[in-house]
Image (cartoon, rainbow, N blue to C red; front, side):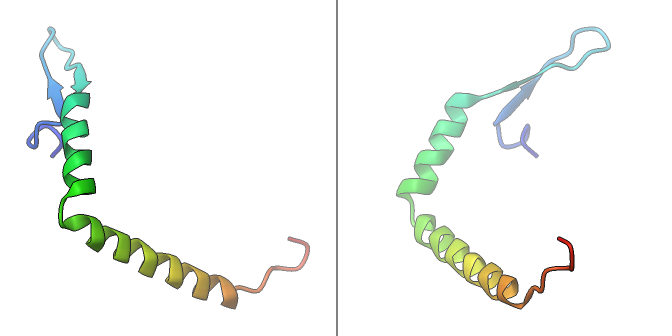
Length: 66
C-alpha cells in the first residue's frame, strides 16, 4: 500500500529488494492532513478515543500484587 501511494520506493538489486522512504511525500501528506478539512475529524476522533480509554481505565481493578 505504501508503494502504491508513493510513500515508499522499491528497486531490484539481484535478489534483494531495498526500499526507500520518500520523506518529501510524507511532508506533503503531513501538510495535507494538518491544513486540510480532515484535521478536525482526526482531532475529534482522537478526543473520542481518549475519552473511551479514560472510561475503560476507570473500570479496571488492579490485580493483587501488581
